[in-house]
Image 1: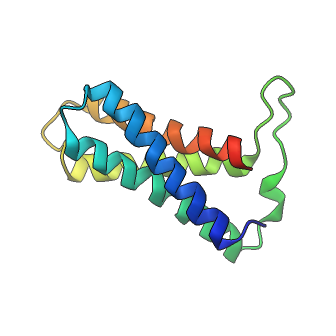
Image 2: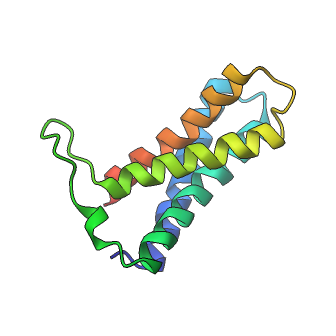
Length: 122
């Protein structure tokens, strides 16, 4: 089970990675979108890992049975939670009047950032 320090470090790296991806996607012209995505990319993995710690979910750190791309179920959960949080934050926040395709696209980038950081760290 990973500790709170590692969780915080991973969340910070996820926020930085999401900021970079979103800055490239928006060409740096939408600071509210970048900040919201960074917050979601940090909040999602923190929430997911807090749940795993509370439930003593050690089994989620088992690699999925894909030998070509071995990721743990914990990595996947972090990405899914970041995607969900980003979609919620964007839909209620800076992208509430935008088309759903744009909202989902930016949310996917935030989730992808969290997923990739978790693969790298854990």
